[in-house]
Image 1 (cartoon, rainbow, N blue to C red):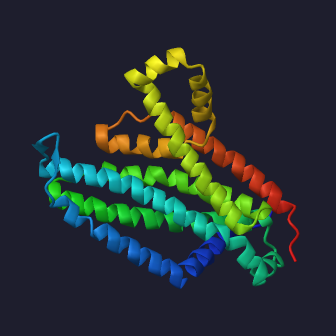
Image 2 (image 1 turned 90 degrees about the horizontal axis):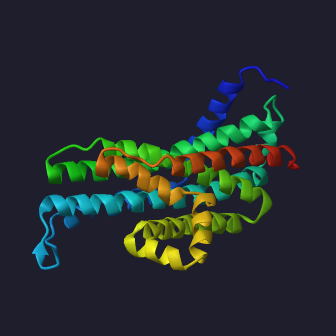
Length: 274
């Protein structure tokens, strides 16, 4: 059944869901604390560090800190997206919001799309603002602008969409905390797969590959497992090398997002709404 104004309905649902999440005190507290800790990084930019007996320059320090901060913030944003998503369906059902919404001429697909859009935009805004703080601190320290840093942040938001979709789907099948832990497990598995893949590209790793048939299994794991950390690394290569992004992690995550979206719409379409 086609419902008139479906796009505007999705946007209205997304708007209300976004506002409801922003009004949560826990959300405000998390954002304020996160921004505070990011601002504390200013002290790291002014420190003196010695590696192999050589003192690092201010530019090298600023670059290293900004790189670490990029990945930490991206991982933290995925953590927050999972926390927000895991309780959305249960809360709406328990409070009667879901029954109220679906009692109107609104398709279930519109409800799901609106919720996904709201959670994705909220977590993306959270991550982008924190990355923006690091961007300006780095710009002041290095006396130069690197807009690719913010572009990389936007590209990494693809991971946030994946997290929202997978937690939303699993929350329909498992307890909320189990859905959250599964998402965290996927992220840890992605980090491990990327680490092993990077090692396999090194000289030592290539020597080991020739004598260890088990490495082939790890390569298969890398290519089939959701490449969340690989997406972050490829996105940051825009900042680090000015380009040369590996397309595979993006193709991998986008493919998973499409599959998860289909499964989520199918599962929610068969869900009993009290």
